Every structure is written in structure tokens, then in C-alpha cells.
Image 1 (cartoon, helix red, strand yellow):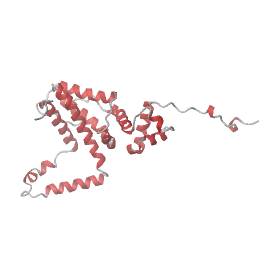
Image 2 (image 1 turned 90 degrees about the horizontal axis):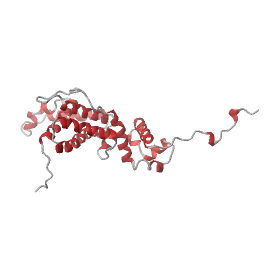
Image 3 (image 1 turned 180 degrees about the horizontal axis):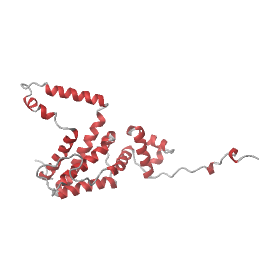
Image 4 (image 1 turned 135 degrees about the vertical axis):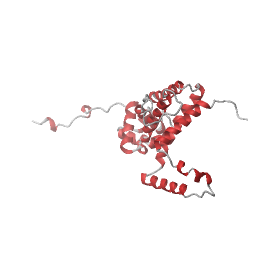
Length: 243
């Protein structure tokens, strides 16, 4: 008697492939990015991963840029939207109220850290922004804090765009620096050039040499956010055509 193990299985008995969905495609793309890097997340490579044809993916995602935006949207779920006042090592500035600005800087720092983990994705985000619920929640949280700080609505509406651009560009810069050793050597050359500059030919650089090199990355980033926030508070929006 023939054993059941020796009987070939019909194709009809094999488990069917899971149906494609937008969420499933994005989940697979995130996994592929973590394993192989964003540069490998193409429609063709993703189709191989899902055991389907690239044409099938275009039903759910228009192009690679939209796919990358969808990946970022998924990762934005990790942004801390309601950090505690003064969290993340941020120092409260003189004259600031109950800490709305601290919480906003911490929120932006959380967003930036998500991008720091995937700097090439941050570079992509400069040209292809997400528009899903996580991104909308991020924008809403920023606007709510600006409103709490009594930033005029028109200035908050423009300011949120600048704040996100600064955070995204800061993270994207990391994707162009190459290996850590190269970045360190480049920094050392800059430090040497600033310290060795002549006070005769470059008096302001010589005078501010120490200040130019001061502060940690975190301190500088927090200061940048505060500078933009203060600028939004104090710079009226004008839509008049320039003369």
C-alpha cells in the first residue's frame, strides 16, 4: 500500500498566497528596508519579496516615491507626540511659560530621531512626504503646541512646514556623510581650519572660534528648533506681492 507521504500533492491542495493589500505591501517594504536598506526597496525587488509581479503592486502604490512615503508614514507611528515638558535633555529657556516650547522641541526631537535611524529615508522624505494618519497626527500635535504658545494661526500654519523641513533636512544630511570615519576626519579638518585662521584676514572667525565649535549636536538641534519657533511667533505672514 502506498504511503500518504509518497503521494504527490495537487497544486489545489497547496496553501494559496495571501492576497495583496496596501498594508501588507508597506509592511513587506519596511521589512525589506530594515534588512537591505532603502536603496533596495524598489517595486521590482518588493515584487520578488511578495512573490508577485511588479505590475500587481502598482494597483496599490503609484511609484517608488509613494512607496517610500508610505514607509515613512508607517515609521512615524514611533514618534512620541506627547512628550513631557523639558524631556529629552532639553533645557527650558528663560521667559517660557509652562513648557509648551519644551514639549514642542522634544516632539520634534523624537521625529528627528526616527529619521536618524533611516537617514536615506529622510532624504527621500524631502521630496515625497506622507499623508496618512500618523503624519496628520504629527502635524496636528505641532499645531496644537504652537496654538498653546499663542503663535498666530497664519504663522503657525507656515511655521509647521519649516519645522518639519529643518528636522527632515538635518536627518537627511546624515545620508550624504558616508562612513563614520570619513565624517570624523572631515570634522577634524574643519576644526583645525577654524582654529588656525588668521585674525588679520578673518577677524570674526578668529574671535568666535570657540563659539563656532561649541555645543553638542543635541544642544544645537534644540536651539535650531527654538530659533524657528521664536521666528514663527514674531514674524508676521504676508501674502502681498513683492515690489
